[in-house]
Length: 340
Ligand SMILES: [Fe+2]
Image (tube, rainbow, N blue to C red; front, top):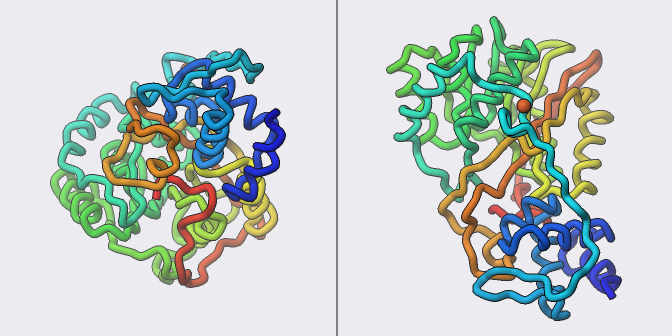
């Protein structure tokens, strides 16, 4: 009965559907009628989930009533059993050692510039930002180290500055509103952050090449953007056994894309993936319009935080390389994108 969905999904959406994709959407439907939560729970790309749900509605398997999606038949779906630690919400770290800095951060970020569509922005919860610091500190990637942040929607630079762990903090960010904000906070609190307006489509300048121990970035999730942003991060690292952190979501990246990205990391860049922390990054819902609203089978806005991504940590090995070619053209959208 569902074989036609499996057949048509790729040509209709550009994303391959597996029997398990459908099973996971059915399983999620048994837990919630909210489209955004179904995307979150199923861990399948949003455009594919939207397509499957629309097909279900056409077939009468699902009814959309008051923007709630309800199964009309008892279909077999994947069962989800959650055993996540409530103390750390599955992140594996607590931020007790940074409690004071966290409170300061909570207060000062109230004046941060809002996320805008121009730069595909959307930022994570404050707890996520500080948990990143905790993870990177636990890994030995911060204390006394030179740290660079490529794109800083999440204000990692400020959190890191407040903790006073790093020797040097540099931020390259295209949005001058954010750079101004980071500079202002840095001055006010004596954080010594070097914040520079920088278009990452341009190659990394000589001043920043091979100069850092650790980078953070959060690339748009197309193959080309991923290669460019992670590649630039790697260009800034000074030697083997340096570390990089970035997010990769399931909302906009299928496992078929994940494997391509992992291939780039391993075969092109020669870095090792040391950690993948599932759903580590939790994003605050943003205000601007996005493709996801057009794709959604119902007319509802997210009520809970539904956009999450995994935190990747990579480490360079002997012979590692980056990517520093100039980027031209639009490399930020693919079939799986939904938040641009
Ligand atoms: Fe825990």
